[in-house]
Amino acid sequence: MENLQARAVEKMMSIGYKENLAQEMSVELLAATPVKKAFSHWVETGEETDCVYEEFSAFRLMSERRHKYPAALNAIDWLNRDPQKARKALTSGVCRLIRRKE
Image (cartoon, rainbow, N blue to C red; front, side, top):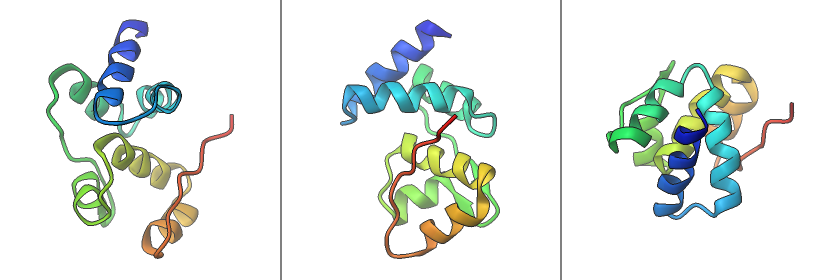
């Protein structure tokens, strides 16, 4: 897992994420059951696969909200964990990333 996480950080930095955010998000996405497989596949192959939660999809978030792939997967994970807050934020005009506190 550690090697995959290091590759995830590198991949995320290559698309514009700052190192500290890439580290934090990659740990979360590799542990997030609903999106772990898609994120791992993207890290290994560069291929983006869609993840869906009700009417939301990673591809739609990327297209309509201009999310980068990891951010779109993070939103899908958030929808699975806290549907009310996530849905409200994603359907409003303003959506900010709320970090998971464990």
